[in-house]
Length: 223
Image (cartoon, rainbow, N blue to C red; front, side):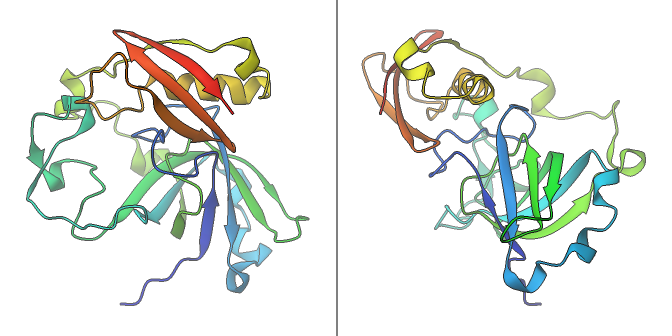
């Protein structure tokens, strides 16, 4: 089987650092899908606007190393406890395939490279290859009473975020909300705990520098 990208994703993140560890955690996070020339065909999207959510099948292209161990350390477990690779959504897998549920915002059929699909809540970095798009169907895809393993017993930790006005004014209101919610999720590796260390996260062309002291994340600069 030969698998080739049908499209590429464009997002505020120029690297994987800072990208939410799961889709739908930051609904305000905007991105778009631009098809390769072969698939820039409006007929291939006919009926898509009748769906609120889409599944994206994509490539963990920023991970040069494949699975080297049957066990991985999910971030929700603090980066210390291990589970089996097939009991996780780790990017380090035998086949580096990602699966994300995203909210469909709109389709621009008039764009120069259209049709372009705009979505919200994605956990993909800029330039990620997309292999397939499928509609989300609640009848088959939603199981509200399902057990979710370690996710059920480990709440997502969110930080208090301080963004100075001189940084915040660089963004639109929605972009600023998205940035704040991304930072609340703590982009650092979960085993890092140095209150003096300065981290840099690319976001919409700016280098957002921050440090974390306990439960508070302080943005230092955003040039």
